[in-house]
Image (tube, helix red, strand yellow):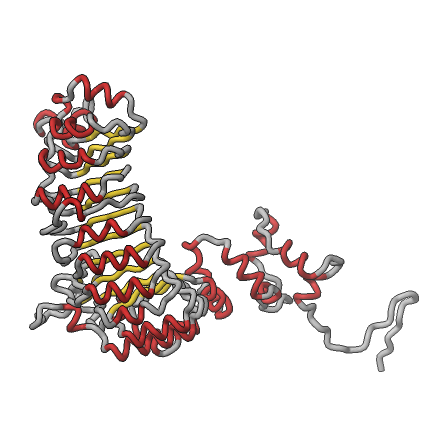
Length: 485
């Protein structure tokens, strides 16, 4: 029999009770008297690493439970933190956990769809419930993704198979049925009532009417492959401010937008500020209706149009138009009519001509007459802009800024004959105009250049190469430049 003798003053051993491990929350808030919210915000701030913290981070304590400290933060506070991070890190943040994935989806506002089933199944709205800008154009095709053949245009890009289209309209053969597109628009509109910008192709009047009813805040719309009947649905978007209509694109799809559709559009969308008509038909009546009804219209873009002769005179009814652009137009107006019917846009400030063909003097003369009050004039890669054509721009006496780029037929003499007559010209930009020579600048033209506020003179880009390589030895023959090491 063994006896245990206790020393005087020694504490009695406690009873055998299983010792509870200290919880993470007890260690976190021990000796803390601050409110929970302020303490969490303070501890989430980054601290400079020290040798002690590095050692501690490499050897985790065995008593710490595996817990996520961000679980203590409410969703609105964590959303505010994640929103401050740059876009390059947001995709990585969504991989942390399911909660961060859902929160990251709530921060996404703009999206471009490639898989239509993702929208039709409802996963798109579950994953991104707060979308305001949606582009559905790429997802409206059932073309093979693994074909390796991408047919691209400035307007649309689509993957195609190895076969050829019998109708030579590639997009029309691979477009989703109209009923499928309308059903997708219905799902999108019901889940995104705050939608502000939408791009879609192949929708019908009923599909757009549903969007107009469910999304009253829709302000910007881009519609491809549309016709006059579809424009009835657009007219229901009473708050629409920016509209882009794409009617006909060569080798992709073809649809007709005529004066009937333009009139319906003008009467329904009276709050338009920006309008682009690409591949659309029409005439004087359609443009006149837009000018008379859309009183807030400030910017108009005409691209690759198929309009009848005389349509140019309808621009004079756009009294508040400030910016006019012609892009990729084979001709401006084949029959502009008498000068007394052309009129002038009184508020026009900017006139841009990009990749257009200027071969008809009568058409060009009418164009410059309509733009007589313009203050900014830009020519970019326009075919046929020679000295005679450019001399017609002399009627625009109020030009203060002129930009010429890629105008290879224009000479120094033709340029000087016009700009010397413009008394309000203050800025000039000449780039890649190979027939405009430095050696042909007259003293009067040099004096005019000296008084400009802004001057960018680079008519011949090839001449810049030798001057920039002076002293480097480059540009010589290989036998003289390269030496054996």
